Amino acid sequence: MAEYIDSSTDEPDTRTTSRRGLRDTARTAKRRVVSTSSTLARAAKPKGGVAAVRKPLRSVVILAMVGGLVATVALPAYAAFNSPAEGLTIEQVAAENAQSLVVASDVTNVALSRGSYAATTAEEVQRKKDEEAAKEAAAARLAAAGTSASVASSLNLAMVAPGSGSVRWPLDMSSIRVGRGFGADGYHQGIDLLGAQGTPEYAAAAGTVRVAGWYYGYGNAVVIDHVINGQSVSTLYGHMVDGGVLVSPGQYVEAGQMIGLMGSTGSSTANHLHFEVKLNGGNVDPYAWLQANAG
Image: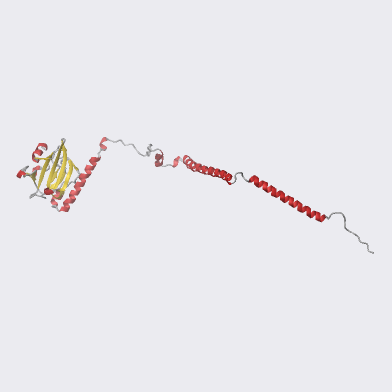
């Protein structure tokens, strides 16, 4: 009979033991990793949640903006402070100090003499401009109106009435004939002074032109308002030739300044100056007034 031999032993299988040990070791390591990760996550998580993260972040942003503003202001000022002075122009040097005067080195001092300049008021300048404008307008009106070329070409627009003083004769009386006087026919309020067409007529006194142009039966006429020795005076010059009014309303004229040219427009039958004078609003004998005041 065959003999049975039992090959088993009481010692444990070493391969099974090794596999179990490896699994246990892996489980332990996994648990340690999970535990460590949780611990780190809890440690890294800030208290207060998202709000706690926003506050430090906002502080960082504000600090960055403040730093940027400081740099923006400081850098140009630093650059201007350290810019080289030798590159500046005269205008730039003067602009930094508006009360300083920069003079080029080649400018020499010139002594001013009192006769080398004159002071002129704004009124005098405007008056001169008005006179020149009136002369130019008169020449243009004469040409447009067809007044004889001999009259226009012979005019000296710079001439003034003879005599001096605050009151002047309105004509050069050496070539004038006196016609109807004040009060003639019971209604004549002026005096007629007869002469050639185009004879220059002058302002009897300084004043402001109120009328310059067609004026009822006076035809082309000029009326000037004056103040003489504190009294209100107005003078009227009637029947000027077409185109012969040489001043404008509102213009200031001097005594003896030429204001027009003799004609026969309006209610007139011959070339003459119809001259009237009103003193404080009432008509007076113009010829007697001229003799008393113009000499």
